[in-house]
Image (cartoon, rainbow, N blue to C red; front, side, top):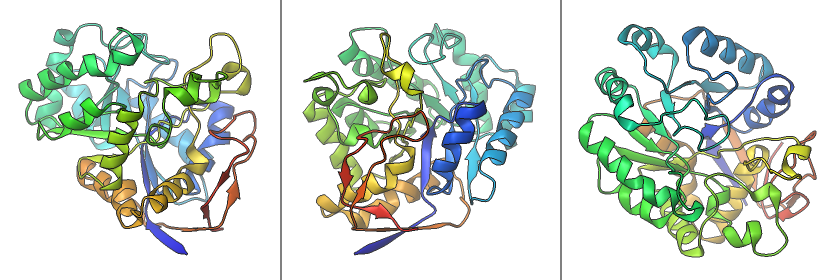
Length: 330
């Protein structure tokens, strides 16, 4: 059996810089027509010259592939002039609570301090992407942050808000309560639970933030994805780290799925008799939510087994060495 996906999109992607970018960017560009690029570099992508230079670096690394990098700015207090100048070059602005994840030390400390910029974004039609976690108990961080989403969605009803990489049933429920709330979900959060990360021997290559949650949460996310909930789209949060930064004390947070995501999703949706919903989940919904028109690209997958490589350079993918029931053709 074969399926064809039209212009698949990854609405949450980490590419890093330098040699790491040169390694991982082509692995996404081979199977995706475009991706939203995260700005939490060092220093962050928080001004237009930095953003334009980063985009050129991505385009150079993906030369020869049909691929559009949808750029984002790191949230800070921007002036109207800065946002007006940047608007045609960005797809969204990404808000990180200060210190909550990798390279987020310069994030927002108090929501009140962000409201002037949020008002400008609402006026100018610039979407807000949010890493929604508190500093509370690790299993409760996303649930505790949901009240912040409610606060922003109520105060700025015309601001398009995307809850990034949701991991809980509570977040799925919140999607239908506010017209301006949307969400992305990762491939790995549709498959794993905390048991896979730490239920037996610790698996550092499945450790991420937000951390994988309970089976009931995973099942709620999966049910929403399998029916292609119109406010939900694929955002892999694929986050490469060299092996020595994962297999160590102080393990870096991030799951690397970029080169295997579409095969993973075809395998998962096929097992649940939902292949007819995969196109919307990996492209159609995102086009509607973000108002983007990706370049034309057809990716063909077939139900032929593939073995996930042990590594890509010095980066270990999710489920390295395991077999999937589907693979990308060509």
